[in-house]
Length: 267
Image (cartoon, rainbow, N blue to C red; front, top):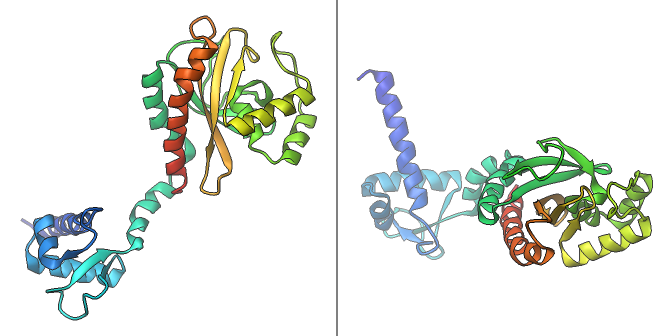
């Protein structure tokens, strides 16, 4: 083996063992002695001592309260909150679509319907993630597709998430065409509907964007609690009743949104 190969192998093994030391701590084992770390990480006591001293110097491990100082032997150790940096760097680099997509895929399998995520851009929603199961609209929806927010379930939860003044200003500046015979275009009626959406936490739109299209949406919130996106389940009015959408799809959608929110709070 060449010197370079030997160094590469040594570096990889050191990283593996160092990560094993960190993973040795968990909810059931928040504090460990050197011997316990060695056993749980499957390394020698000498190696465990070296890794613990290094992690302590870097601020990822601290001696437990009352364990004293000096030799690692006989002391107990615990992780510090700084270990969160190891995952935060990854999470903070993710965009909302990357976080949302795997959740949408699971939701689509659960409800066997098309699911999407969108953000608000002026008076429109813009699709940022989607898992289609069947063609339910006359137009093909792809990432970047735009629809008027006022006539969509995702648009209404996004509009409802705005401060009242910003919402009213946006509605006043928007063209509100009658897209179907069901489309709500009266601003007073729309404001009342958005108030209901804000209070109940979800929006159901039935045939207002396109005849026969029924969808339910809920908001996604960041760590400050601000609405930053929306997710929905879309279906055909001939296949799913309103009652079925609310009784089956809405709970699954809400659970998915809660799981996404938990990840968004980390970025």
